[in-house]
Length: 431
Image 1 (cartoon, helix red, strand yellow):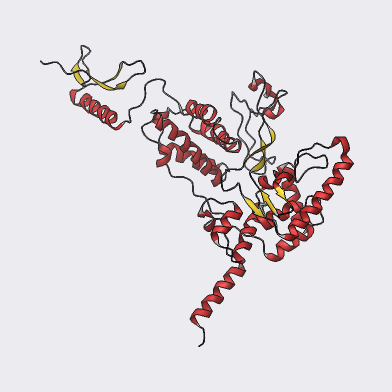
Image 2 (cartoon, rainbow, N blue to C red):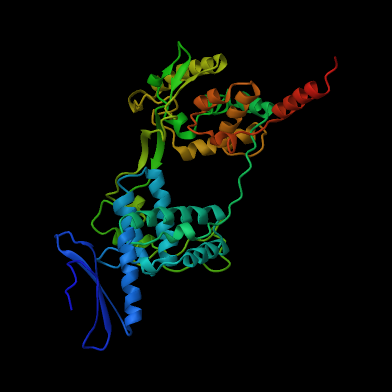
């Protein structure tokens, strides 16, 4: 029998009575051939396995050799080693919540290469039955899809089952901007409050929460009536600085699930901590990396210059004068940070306190309860009512895509009436 050329696949019957096949699929890191072995009871069966390996080799989908990842090991490696150094802190918080709270408890024991779409779909359904919002299940789906995409590119998987799994359906949240009359009531009450101009910026200019709280006086030109938003203020989670994070948070670990009639939690009860829980870093005596931080805005479009209307510009000047008096009163207790909106000691405003102040403002103004982000939608709607071109609206609002047309814009009554009048003027005009 002539000898097969080097690297060719081979099929033979061994002394053990089984048929064996060997296929060279690539070259190992040390330069030696990566030759895979398969076996079966019949020649036909082993031939089928050999042909399958050859197809995977030719298409570049052969699984890498080495450890067989479980879903838990891969997700942990991905979120802590791959994602953590490269994504924003707020993004990482969402990733970790999905991985440790839902994915690892739900599918962590599966071998990564044996994970099926149905495993994920059953997990999503279980989450929703347990009280999680569909949006939470959808975020979990996006997270596992991102993690498995990395495993696919690195050769640990032949397919991304999350792309095949049906994601939970989420209802599009209806956006209801404030009416002009509601906005005016809010502005009237805000004008008499400390740091009230901060909410006027949201209503008139559409500044995001982080952009407004991260605003500094050196980025506000009171003479030209311009302000710039290259940075924002965010609250970051604390990290352990001790040698044993699990032991550090031992007294805070939740070891038992909540009773069925639990009334402690308003939403879904959190699950017990995993056995090797390393959370609760906010209580670590050597904690680090958390607290309020100034970071770049998310996109290039967010780094923008915005014109300030004359009444708002005058309010900013009055606000600065009031802040100067607070600085004199605080004396040596004042911490200089150049923040436009600060506490009485000069420190920046915490986003949580800002949220509470917004809710209190709505209540005092006798305006329906709404998210602070709805003020941003109101700003976009006002620009549209005024007939500002769409491209200019995008520039003012800091949008990089036309997503504003499907999510952020809302046809206000003024726009609807205006369209009706234009149609009437065209179709029923009199000569």
